[in-house]
Image 1 (cartoon, rainbow, N blue to C red):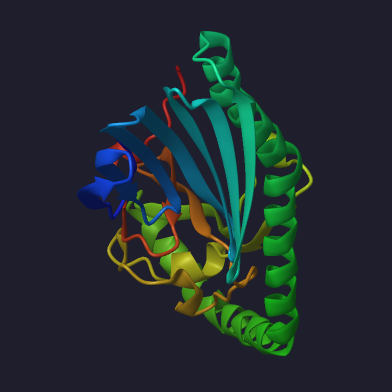
Image 2: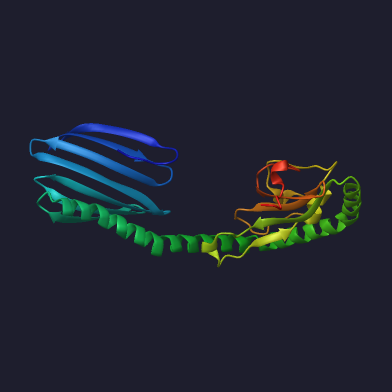
Length: 272
């Protein structure tokens, strides 16, 4: 019996072993996790194996399997795949079929894994990801600086057009972009050490307003006039505070998400 989330491949196997017929059900998942349930019965006893494995890094997979049987007893087998090498750590707990041994064989590896995942694996993966992003930013630093200068020059050229657009929109109580920010926003309190990396795009967005409407297609907004990518390789959003018919509205859109304003659903309810 197994469970997973995405891109699942189910494999059913049956055959003969020295203990008799065996059947297994395995699910391999694109999310690098798998579960196994393998009952076997034969002339020399009955054994049930269950376990799970999970990819903990690009080249490493950690797994644990519990074997419960008569007369074999209870045993735990830990497996670590590192690149092309595989390491096994068999632990024989008892020759008797004791519920306490089954419980500790099952709960022990889970508690150990979650502790390791929280204290070592996840911090290491975050640090590795940040290191890779830093390398990417360094390699793109000169290109980013050039695009920033081009965006700032484009914004300066837009000033007069934006002034006329604002005057026309104010006369009809149309669409006024009060503030607009593009980049990486940090709201998760568990990641306070991360810095927000955003740029002000109020002027470029106002310049795109036509007949009290702003329409952006499904594409990265870093390519829009007056925009550039302030955080290469990271997820970005566009946050817009705008006024329409004298009422404030606000919306946050993912980088590649289409956006159309104004919308009634963006309206800020002052009374709430």
